[in-house]
Length: 103
Image 1 (cartoon, rainbow, N blue to C red):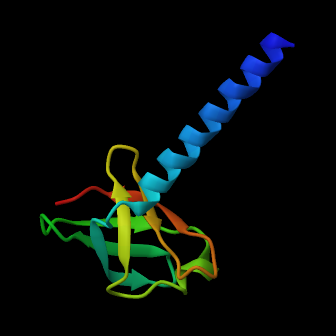
Image 2 (tube, rainbow, N blue to C red; image 1 turned 90 degrees about the vertical axis):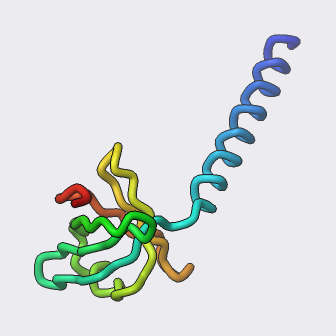
């Protein structure tokens, strides 16, 4: 019984930490803004608002590409090569893969 109780407590702590980390990650300020969208190919151009560097990313779901707009903020992780575009709350965030690193 004691081991089971300790395991449940540990599981609760781990889950709480995961929720906290996920909330912090989502609360991060977007680094970049969309500057152009090719709706046919799903390739999106964006600019880092701090450095002015530009990059491209691809959104493979063409239906979600149509929901993007120029000026919309995005979060880019150049280490992992992933981009997240926060949606308006009615749809889940849109994920993209960085094709061209900042220049």
